[in-house]
Image (cartoon, rainbow, N blue to C red):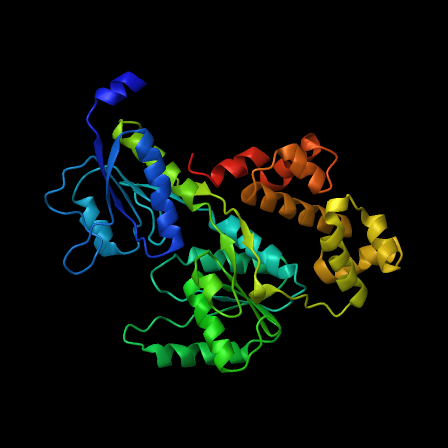
Length: 388
């Protein structure tokens, strides 16, 4: 349909049943709105029944639904409408009658594993209680990633208690944390359990990040309002919303769906105080890591690091392999590309300028390295963080 035809056609009625009480939900709704504004959609956002549940009103007559299907009751409610539906959550198993766009849990886990391993930690745990906000896959992918790196991962596997109060939850988490070997890196399902961990640690004088480092699997304002502030994984929620809207548009136009979800990789780690440590006993290795972080934009190489730390290149290679299971060259590339990722997302600087500021010879070499590391060109990452 061309623009002239589209301007004469009636607006399409679309329901968006996504919670807007957190940053993830609001960003998804904004992404849907960006697509809807370009395609004459009239959105019904987060309608609720008299019990406060997300529900479509009886009088609504629409053509499609975008929803976060986090419980069976909502799923069955929507199924009765027999409309094209796209789910933006992975809480429940996929079914053939709806499409799905979701964060790639394996990529999220890979980011979490790399971040915590990079702190020199050797003890790991996952706290992702069943609170109805995410699937078990989030925790299991992290466990698999840690085990693939050669380490064990302690899982909080106590079943949720329907009638549990704050004190009961506190005592269960306190006992679990107390048994973990320290220092330990903990991956929390999202900012809510991460905040709970911070509270338990504070009340028991457990030092964060020295004894327990905490990384949340999603980004929210909660990460900034607690003390210490919580490191998190920033998701491409705008892109999820836009992609879900595009998929719904195709389904409403009669295009066939897919039995496979559309997977959207996370954007980056948001490092904050809760993982701000280097749990490394090797002083030379710790000094090398500090030097790399402070000078990575200067085009340094492994020889520069060895000279700055007054060790031989062979010794440096051995220390990195023993302490981090990667070479100093790999660490330089990793830190350099993380700096590129930050500049792409936080600034509007041209890619050639970012290349120079990050120690690359030029835009071409940056793009090649970025594509190899992240599977996409730099411009694609920047687009994924916008609603245009």
